[in-house]
Structure formats: structure tokens, C-alpha cells
Image 1 (cartoon, protein in one colour):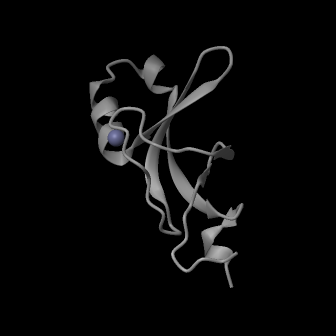
Image 2 (tube, helix red, strand yellow; image 1 turned 180 degrees about the vertical axis):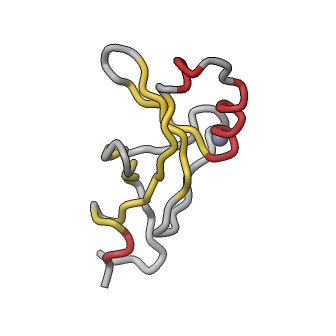
Length: 94
Ligand SMILES: [Zn+2]
């Protein structure tokens, strides 16, 4: 079932090697790029359960600009949200 216009439903968060079935900005709700190179994303992991929130580049810049203390800044990591197609990186389709 290879459709020409791929629908990417899963995103791989690169540095934290995390697979997300739904990936939208936690601030503006915007989706992430479906291009093979992905989108720059800001990831923050909070709480005991390590719940992750993902923010798009624009909102991420906004958030980082408002963070005053380095202690808080440590929880935020710039990352890449790369779309996966059929469970594989989109770039690997032949
Ligand atoms: Zn956003």
C-alpha cells in the first residue's frame, strides 16, 4: 500500500530517539513538516513520568526567549521531528 502522496503519522524525535504517533506543537497546535528532513523542534520533558511536550521552531524560539534561568533551560532540548512513513524513515523509500 504505497501511496504517492505519503501520509506521515509517526514522527521520530532524533536526539531523544522517541517515536510519537501524533506530533503537533503543544503551544500552537501546528503540525510538523512531512518532508524527509523534518522540522526543528523544541522538546521539554517534565515530571516523574517523563512526559514530553513538543514545540515547533517558532513557538520554541518564543519559549526559549522567555526562559530566564539556566536551571529551567536544561529541561529544554532542540531536536528534530522527522516524519516516518510506514514505520520507516521517509528517506529510505526506494
Ligand atoms: Zn507552535
